[in-house]
Length: 340
Image 1: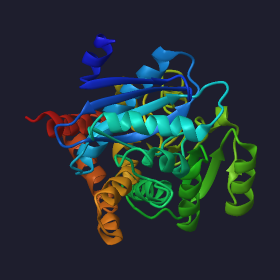
Image 2 (image 1 turned 60 degrees about the horizontal axis):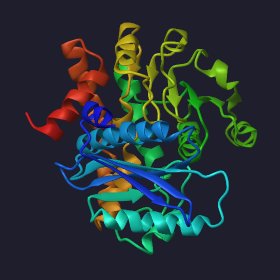
Image 3 (image 1 turned 180 degrees about the horizontal axis):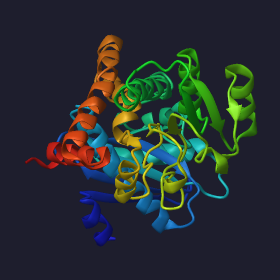
Image 4 (image 1 turned 180 degrees about the vertical axis):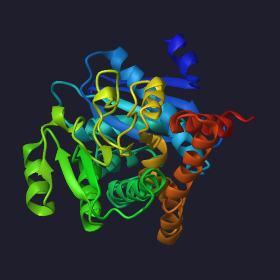
C-alpha cells in the first residue's frame, strides 16, 4: 500500500467502512499544496479492493494535475465507493459517506463522478459542507463538454490549420452525459459524427437526432477520422490499439486515456496530436470548483474559455522541444504542484 502511495506521490489514503449501510469507500488525497483536494466520488463495482485503491490513486493524481493546469487554487483527490451486490438504502450509504468526508476536516471536497448523481451529493450534504455538484448546483457535464469543444477547436487549429469544425469527421467513443452533449455541439458546428456506445438506446438516439453514423465499439478506434474523441472509461490508447488509429488527433473527455506515458510518445511518433486529457476535460472541475467558491456564471464561462489557450501553449512547447504534449503537460503540472 505504501509503495503505491510513494509511486504516485500520494499524501493520504483513507478507508471508510460502515457495515450498517454497506459503505466501503476509499478516499485518495494526492496533493494539497495549492489548496484542498477536490475530486469526484465514483460508485462502481470493482473486482477487488486492490482495483478500487489503484483506481482512486490514479484518478487523484490526475485531479491534481487538472486543477494545477486549470489555474485553480485546489489540490487533487478522488473517492471510490465499491458498489455492493445488494443495497437496502442508497441514501443511507451516501449519508454514511458524507460523515466520512466530514471527518477529513475539509482536506477533501467531493463531487459527482461515474455512477453518482446530484441526488447522491444531496445525501452527502446532509452531513458535510465539503461537497459540490448537488442537485441545486447543477450538472457539471455540460461544462465539461463545452471545455472539450474548445479544446477540439484548438487541436484542429494546431494539427489541421483551422479551428473550423465544418466537414471534420469526429469519432466519439462513449455517449454518456458528456459524450452526448459534446456530440450535439459538434454536430451544430458542422462536424460529421461517427459514434459508438454499449448502450444501444443512446446510439440510436445519436443516429436519429444528430445524423451520426453508428460504429461497433471495437471498430471505432480503427475508423478513418480527423479527430478521435474518447469519452468513456480510461485506457483507450494502449499497446493493442495505438497502431490501429487512423486519425490526425486524439482529443476527448475521458480520464486516463493513455494506458501509460509511453503511449503519448507513440502517438507523437506517428504524427497524431494528443490533447492531454486532464487539460481538455477540465471544464467540469472548473465549474464545480468555482461554483463551490461562489463565483458568478460569467467568471466560470471566462475560465472555461482558457482551456483552448492552455492547450495551444502546450502544443507549441511540445513542437519546440520535440516532445509529446503529454510529457509537456505533466512537467508543467508538476512544476506548479511541487515547485521548481
